[in-house]
Image (cartoon, rainbow, N blue to C red; front, side):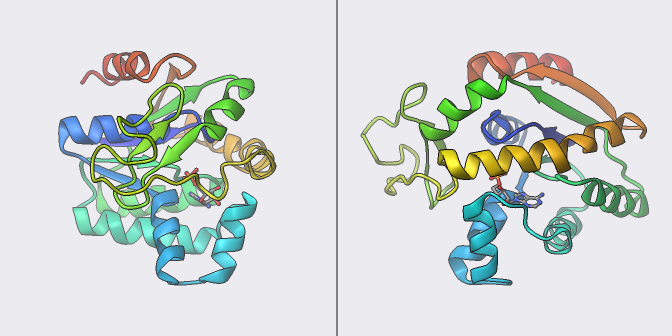
Length: 214
Ligand code: AMP
């Protein structure tokens, strides 16, 4: 399993990646989670990175590519879902280079299709666990006990970039820098499949499994 989940913020990539990797014991590589952890630990670019993330701007390519390259090497370039990477054509090209040098090219890019209108309400009602990264939605998937993670008991938070202002910036970055990545993949050997991501998480998962033959 060598898969990229592609789509705008709030399209459910993280939720679906967690479902697949749990069921099939694959590695969930989320660059957003990795960057938030780096910010929390004060690693790398520290304060500058925090500003990028909170404003909804992309982190520098070099930094993100380094994080992914290290993780892929650690797991032997097999059995993973990339969530939130690549987000620029430069990142996609760097990923291809890393994978072709390892002799294990990408198999599938899943394009999560969802209307931009649906994203704002999803993003604003999202809550996350800072300890285990479990994702909730106060309307569609609330925790059993309000404000507390079902899985590990930690206190849930709202991401610093899950607000209307940051979302606007994140969507601009998606339109301008990330969408061209899909055109790039149309010209490579990876197969691109589309999934309707506007329905419930369970319905998306069912379609995803069908499309991926899982
Ligand atoms: P996500 O959790 O995927 O929504 O990512 C949250 C934020 O982390 C994004 O808005 C960016 O600021 C940053 N980020 C995540 N992945 C990348 C990436 N591949 N390239 C650049 N910045 C990223």
